[in-house]
Image 1 (cartoon, rainbow, N blue to C red):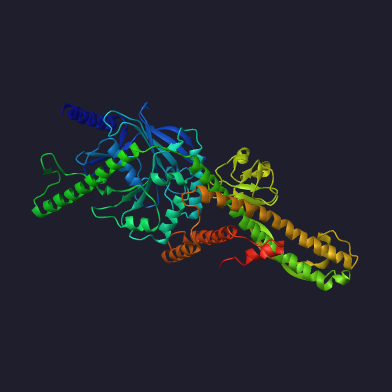
Image 2 (cartoon, one colour; image 1 turned 135 degrees about the horizontal axis):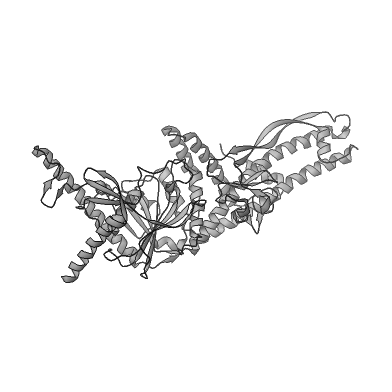
Amino acid sequence: MATACAASTQQESLKMLIKRDFSTHYRTVKDLQIRKLIMQVQHQNKEQRVQVKTVGCKTQNPTIIILVVGATGSGKTTLINAMVNHIYNVGFNDDFRLILLDNEDAPKRSEADSQTDFITAYTFCHMPGMPFQYNYILIDTPGFGDTRGIERDQEMMIQLKAFFEQDNGIDQINGVGFVTPASASRLTHTQRYVYDGLCSMFGKDIKNKIHVMATFADASRPPVLDAITRAGLHFVKLHKFNNSALGICNENKGDGQDINADDDDDDDEDDNDSVSIQKLYWDIGHKNMKNFFNMTGCADPVSLTLTKQVLDERILLQITIGGLQDQIHIGLHKLDALTKERQMLARFGDDMKANEDHTVEVDVAYFVKHNLEKGKFVTNCSKCNFTCHYPCIYKDDKDKVRCYAMTNKYCRVCTGKCWWEVHNNTDFKIEWKTKKERRTLKEVQTRYNIAMQGIKDKENVVKSIEDEINQHVRRLISQIEEAQRCVERLEEIALKPNPLSTKEYIDLMIESEKIQKLPDYQRRVEMLQNLKQKVVLFQAVRKNYPSSSGETILEHFRNLSVD
């Protein structure tokens, strides 16, 4: 009895300490104080958008680390706020609530240093009165699948890899909290993309550490349980939460008097019913929160080594497929142009002098520059005029040696496989396109440095054309083999080896975007079309491809093109 009384006293003391010394008044909703938790920034890298924040002083107690992931709109922000209130024993009858994050006050997406775009480790150092005996770290990640599209999701993967490489002492985790709405009876194509994308970022050894955190739940069996089971997501346990009571003031405190009571008995009865329902939700959340903290507190930690390797291979595969896509595009147009030149030589080459002014129209590759958004970085090769990596986390040119496009200080993406120092961060990225251009027989000869001496020179020109095609394809084969190696390694170590959704899912996502027409949907459709090309290419490099000649290989990839 005395022990329970002492524990209760400690809990109340902790609650008052946090209210007085570790939080500040943020706003008032009716009679409920909303207080924002004060955290000290221990580490921050604005360029890579990662940070560590702390409440209290680190103790010698064990540390439990949980990574929280979820799609945009899944209720992740509110869930984290509910976890903070649980940690500091804030109860339903208290006149205040703690918040760590606030959707209503989130910075605009256009701000380069938007805090919602940071990966943040929140460290809650143990204090007497907490419901557990350890330090607790919650790693909050940006929402997956938001309106900025696939490009932002790919950037988050690089961001997560950068976070794990920080010198912050986080090299293992005890669990992954996978936040999802409880009401999803079946996965939409967009939700399936989110599930696949999140699962493909982890190593196989995380499989038994995943907890599904179902938000907006009631007392019944959540429909999402069947949906994620059908999707093949393995998890340890599903926890139900309904955090709607978090912002509700219990107006029937202590003496049972309603603070805002009036003379309408029916209204009083409705208010009492509402409070009872909110209390039920609060109790369900408290019970599941307690189970979640107990389960993760007893779980053995898993090293992040394998997950780091998965992220390495995924980023490398993403860069390789992106570069391969551009190189195939350039190669096909080069093949078309060279084929027309060869046909022109075959037709007029026996009398090259007489026909030197004959022209043929060909498609010629050229590049255009697209200005970047503020706060975005890129790795461009100044020698090849090629974007080797976008988005890149390294702003300074002196750091480009660490860019994921580099291997042993040489670029694996650009045409010349150039030395890292000729790569720069610029305010634009490069896109290769084609334009029509007329060429004369004389220009073809000059381009290959062939003197006009008859049939022998025609054969030399044809051979030079074929050599140019084969040289370009040899570079493609090198990238294909690199992509194949990544795929094989991911199949060995990744929780979900295939990092790209199927073409059918992407088609459905495109149709959904076109129907809904939400702001900036055209840009997202363009991204999805680009991803669809990558999916086809990814599936192609997993299989055998013809190896007889450069032309045969390029034609093979032309036939794989999608509309």
